[in-house]
Length: 201
Image (tube, rainbow, N blue to C red; front, side):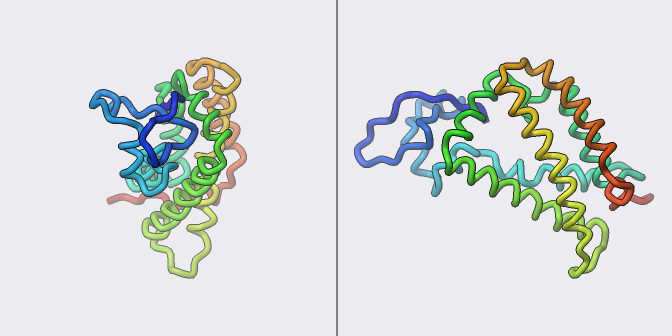
């Protein structure tokens, strides 16, 4: 999701993307204009968050693929540690991520869309946990546990964005995130850490 700013497109009456965004590499290679691509998105902030569906489903995918004897929360902690150790761009550990975050902070519709994405992540994960744990429709635990796990995920992403905005390099930030994940795990209760443990198949 690496974007940068450039001058506005010149199509008469054509909508502009938020904060005058440069297209992703695929569109640039095809010589497609910013406004042409924007016309295919009902909301221009959806152009900025062009892979939001994958982000919404990520925690659920990790939980569904957890190992035998592993809980939902421990799976997410393990996956986030692996992303940090790999200095993964999926975690925002890449050059240019600071520019991406700066645009989000400066454009209110993008901030609103980011909040909406966070809520979608929680709701998707809650549904997955309810199914995986075999919980009843009235059981509040899947929603509460989803809130804790989504908090882990959000806390790491917020911390990455904050450190990258300070001008730190991705390798340095990745090491800081590993320490942060240890601190987060220490704060979690046994009930959270042991929820939805996968049994023998």
